[in-house]
Length: 364
Image (tube, rainbow, N blue to C red):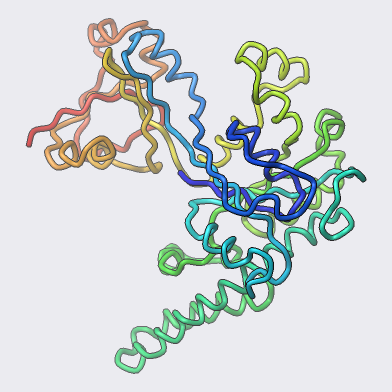
């Protein structure tokens, strides 16, 4: 999974990126500090995997990973090549989902590129550039569909739909805000539109606001309202707190978060939100050689899940031997689970569940 972190200059984007990836990307109080996109790979925290590692003491421990891309700050006119616009737009086209960092704090020492704090304006500034870029892309598809329509009238429905999406873009709305049937959603996914990518608005607050109760922050409420209209997710975050805990040892971090009344870090919450947004789950494989998490789409059947490990596993799939994580923990070992008949034998139609521990049987 590849997530692009975007936002106007000086909203806390690179501070957040540094904190969650420990990648040491340069962060400073002036626009265009980030020119080339910084990339950091983060292990997905999964306590189930840690428990399995305790049980098996494996030679190799492989968690699922997420790639975070810190994309250059955007300014007005980016779609026309202003600032680093073209570079920004090509970088964002490559990600699976967007984390849009929005400034929801006041700090006179940190310059805002527009001179004032206004989350809705900031979001709309970036949205407008993405929309203008999408209109160009969609117009090319509309032209192509019109040509095909001359030879085959069946393309009229497709053309009507694309014109409806274009109308929404013209009105300043994102492609993801357009109400679609399942067939139309599939059709829309064939066009590479930036405003159709899943998005999470990360409302970056001051430490005081974050601890004092996020709901009382009026800027956060503004972002929440906007996100609702955009079919987008939103989560409060404090980039400064994430920066403070990024270098801590796990026990120290847990104590620090507990003192602040927090159950988990912003990174953990962000990853959970992204998994949910993209409809992802993890299944696990466990044994002495390796304990590992595999990321799949919710609804994936056993043979296709096996194919994530190796194409031969899918091609020669015989069955999957499956037990849920909680079931395994309740009896303490795989041997005990087998004795109690808790390990199920599942066929080709089995739909994988989050936390399934699996051994695939195959023959090629």
